[in-house]
Length: 185
Ligand SMILES: [Zn+2]
Image 1 (spheres, helix red, strand yellow):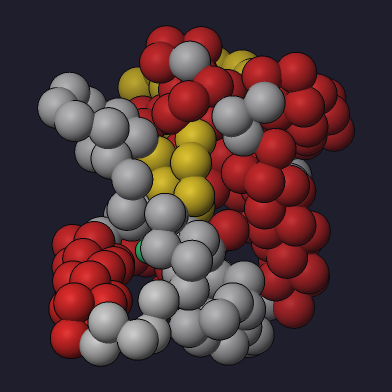
Image 2: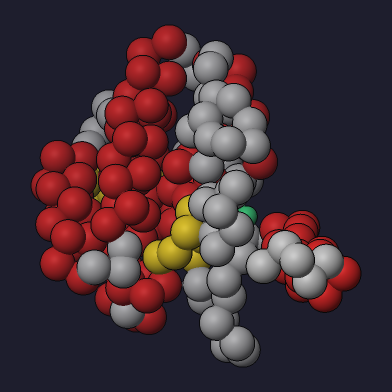
């Protein structure tokens, strides 16, 4: 995964660190943030401090709002546009032996500021390419993780095979229960 797809995936992963029904807060320390960035192939040095974490948590709140707004096009666009206006300053740069490439955050932004800018840009480009429907939440009621519905094939409703099979097993058991005890309807 590269370019804006990676930024969008990072935005979804950031949103999914928020405490939910299946786990607590997965972004509680600067080390958690560094691990998230490294897991999404951010090159070293990944040096993260308390200020980066604070800004990343603000970005997380914003992305949570974006995924909650989806697939309402207008609400989704308003939230992403607000986030872009506050964080993004796209520009071409060459440095450290790397040829011209796109930076989307403001010069000197924290890791959290970078997450807000690149995540918002990644999600906006994804929506522009695939439609507002691309931003979803997992259909498992006990999960509701943010997911990106990209690629061809049947509409992806679940964040993972684990959620899909858990819901399938629960539905199967419920059906068996109905058959097994006619009195319980
Ligand atoms: Zn799920």
